[in-house]
Length: 117
Length: 117
DNA sequence: GTCATAGTTGCTTATATTGCCAAATAATGG
DNA sequence: CCATTATTTGGCAATATAAGCAACTATGAC
Image (cartoon, rainbow over all chains, first blue to last red; front, top):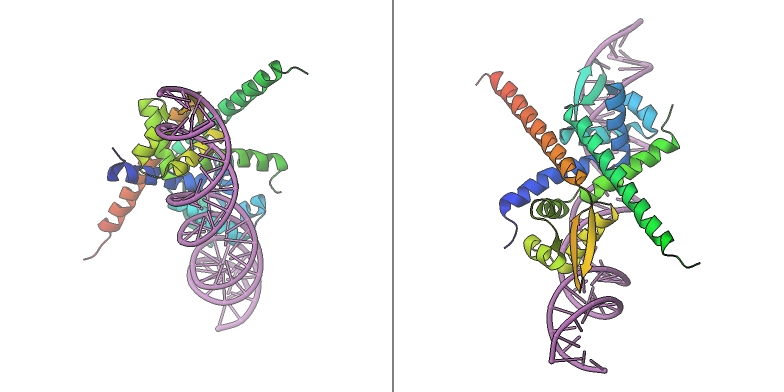
């Protein structure tokens, strides 16, 4: 019994969002906007320390994935979170990381406890 | 004022977890285990419809990221969620997708409302 | 119109990911 | 020990992603 077409589409749309977030620079940008509110491309470029074109591309990936939305004001484009659910989602990621570190610590302790020396 | 070393490391560890999840097959596997409990590699291989070696590699990626944990029983290896926080995290992803579809619907309606025909 | 500023897009090169086959390893039963 | 079953790992070819430079578009000031 194998994966249905529906299952596949569902998994792909979720993967699309995760892929968009799965890059250090993009995570940093999302975090920054979450903590400090909307930013323009030039600000983000300075904060990230990469070429403007690179940052612009990261932003367009995040926008296409529905994570950021943009608003143009003159020649400046401000990017903001598309939904407060993004911040909640990132908080959930933090929990996963904490659990991971707890488990790694536990594994390490178990190894140490069984050592002969 | 640019990104600190700490910021970079923090963003990278988060990206590590997201990258591990950012693949349709891996999402499907995590979902399956979430809904139905622990599964062995051969079961998952049948459900996913890919080579055993491919599924095994996906599982090892998920395990290294701290998303799944494994338990060996004879020659069989059972994979389960490493933490209930994974299920919560995936639920948060669902919220993000819903928000995305709502926004897309809104954008579509706005375009239709302004049409001349 | 010209200039300057902000952003985006085309292109190329470098790097990473994915999938499968084949071979290796691990555990169990005869 | 040999065969069988479950899983992992090495290697390779195909594909995808990332970064920066240069060129382009858009807006506003003069």
